[in-house]
Image 1: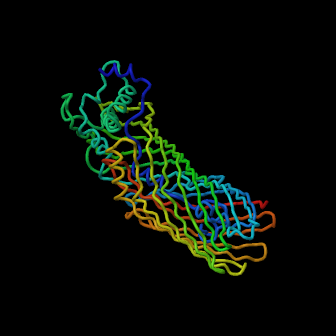
Image 2 (image 1 turned 45 degrees about the vertical axis):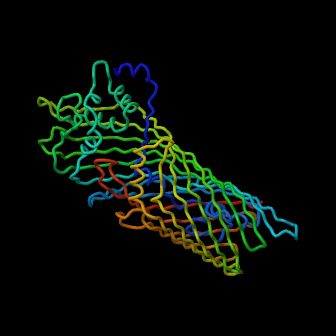
Image 3 (image 1 turned 180 degrees about the horizontal axis):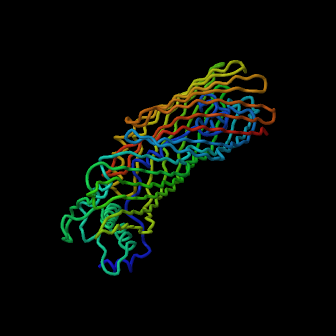
Length: 503
């Protein structure tokens, strides 16, 4: 029966579900403090100020604050120390990278018609990195729950005949067949059975209940995580100044996501009576996403006082996933140590789906001290529990992920404070960012301290910034069965150099 399937569908390896879990939604909905050096040196508190290329991506009214056409870009260096915390144990990893962080241009058109109330019009484009997914982290600890619970969760309910190997069938054949015909859960049951981690209660082909071949007790579990990728936003902007008092603007944004997540899980220290021991389970995920959003914003001037407001619509991003898996485990048979390696060498391609990242509203206040300096305050609110995954057809899997997101994630409240002091052609800057944690079990909120300096050369300017950003993530080992939580704390040191030309 299954051989007929191979002949007819040898080239088809797409599945009906998607690969995303709560962990991936957490990764994809996060944002960093990226952009121009002036913007980052003031912790991004530009909602009521404008006049900065990155600020255009925050408040669309920012572009009409510019007095001249301007073009510029930013180079970024990051040093990251990631601490993985699991059952009271901590493991650290360090990494360093350079990035081309931001590029943009704004074009200013002054209205010479004295009868018009619109005194300045601007158009702009800005390319900005919303988040950098690059991350190398590890966790290690002693857990009472073993990885066999993961395979049992998916296996129970799957007929034993579906996960066996018959004559002339290969690991790749059956893994592909199960993915196409039954789905992800059947593939997990197959991996667990073929690696001898689980067995059916009986040898009846219709048996749908399974047991673990790993002794109960305490297990040493290690997880190595290697993430790569970014979330980039391209903002197409239009703004105008009304009666030299009110700046109004709008953005149409294109979003681009590239995300790769590699996880290498190891479980050892099983009891001496355990039939199976030293389990290695590797999972790779690649996600590609394209999407859009819109923004509206305004900045109102009262003498030296500035008030800003902006609204970011939800981000609707269409994503395509690819996954690969590999598992191995050791066992003793007839006094011989055998390593069972199950490597289907199959890439699962999943049907596209849409990720909705919730809307965000920002309120800002700034005071300008007569060309000497300024101080700025910004508050934003984004309810991450409203993040949602959807497909054209109804999916129970997606509904379960959405319920997890709704129950696990919180509203993200962000406060930014920035200041600038000008001494002739040199500007000194500082800022502070505070962000509430997005999950209850995370120990600490996110915080950043920023500094910077700028040099105005008349027809151009150069800016430098320093950022120290403490970010925290709360994740789970696996989506089902073995759902033990762990935390990753990222201590980011970031240096940014920007150079802009006035035309």
